[in-house]
Structure formats: C-alpha cells, structure tokens
Length: 308
Image 1 (tube, rainbow, N blue to C red):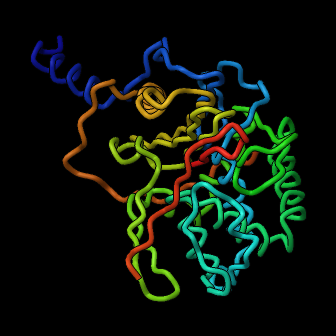
Image 2 (cartoon, rainbow, N blue to C red):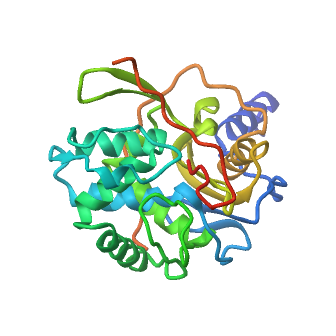
C-alpha cells in the first residue's frame, strides 16, 4: 500500500506541473469582429464575424512593415519628399530633403504609427505608392488573406480598402514570425533622432503591451470608419497567441484585448507580473530643435481621421 503522505505529494506535484487550461468560455469582449489564434500553428481558438469585410485602420501597417522587413537593406537611406507629408493627421513632421535609414523608419512606424513614415517606406520600397499597394495585395494573397484589398500603406480611409479579422490574423502571424519585426514590436519607448540631431521620445501606441507583461506587442488602429482596432500578441509558458479585435471602442479595446490574451494563454483574469522573467528564443510558426511633437489633427467629416 502506498503511504497517504506519498499520495498527497504526488497529487501536489501533478497539480503544480500541469499546464493551466483556459476556461471553456472566452470573456465577453466588444467589437464587430474578433479572432484569436495560436501564433505557432494558426489554430483558431475563438472567432466572431471573422470574415466580415471592414476598414482596419493602421493595423494594416503590419503588412507594410512585413514587406519592408522582407525587402531588407535596412541601412539604406530614405530621403523624405514633399508628397510623404500628405498624410495627416498623425505624422512625425519629417522635413523633405532629410534622410533616415529604412530601419529607423520601420521602428518608428511600429512604435508610434506615423502616416508620413508609412508613405515614405511604401514609396521607397515599392517605387511608388500604387506599386507598393500591389505588393501589399500580392503578399496578402500569398498568406491566404484573400478577402482583403489594400490601397495605401498607412490605413487612412480609401475607397475599396478593407480586410477581415481572419485575414489580419494571417498577416499578424507572418509578422510575428519575422525576426526583424518581433523585437521592434515589444519596444515601449523609442528615442527618435531627427536628421538635425534633435531627439523626441516616442511611446508605443499599444497600451495593452504597456500594462500587461505577457503581451508581446503588435499594432493599433483607428479611424472614424474602422473604429478602434487592435492586433495584440501574447506569450506565456511556451504558448504564443494573437488576438484581433476590429470595430471596438476606446474604453474597451485595450482591456478587452488583455482579457482575451489571458483567456487564450490560460492565465487568470487578475494576473500579476512574475518576479523572474526569462529570455525566450523566437520560434517560427508553421507555414500557412526642440523635440518635435507628433502632429494630431481633429477628426473631420471629410474622412481624414486619425489612424494609429
């Protein structure tokens, strides 16, 4: 007969070592479309209106960033031209004639989401904005995002520009697997140095990542048409997940994203930061002046709404 104290020890061991399982029901989150996937396998963990076509705001900068990163030559100088500035309201106000490396602009794009930077990168990478849009659509199709159509690199409102939560999850998985983009997306603060030497501290627009240790970044988005959108990734105990929430509200988007990440990762809804953090290797998913201020202009009925 096995002693009772041995049984107690065994039971305690099994409870301690067993993986945390997510509850059967996901949290009630707000949004027109929601998709949660395993970042490694692409398994869909939850979805609501995944194939509804709608504008996605600046979350489509994930696709812009992916194309730029795969193009490479991140040390190449990109010279700003006047047409790059036709992208209000959120810009870094880069002066025409000044130059920055692709890598510098790519980092600023994912951290602060400036629309002039997206235009400069698109023009430089594609040769023209129209040609870059073709690259976006070709890349999206190659990832299985076949219910999307992109017109510009920044997500500002445009006719015939749309995506879906399911498609954005496919694009997000590709960005998550990219070894150039992954470290950038976890950057909370970026000291951006202008060409004249002045420095402005940029703060990441993804509030979910700033306030939740398990969140590993990705991308915010907002216009009057798209409403509040967010693609967020999270990692815990060897599991990586991605949540896509489109068409939500300002007061819910970040907290809802955190709640959904916790559910998908098997974390309790009230989660404290661990006392010890370990550095994890990036795993590849299976296929499928005074410092300048970022310029913000009030929304107008003309459709030139903020996009972040």
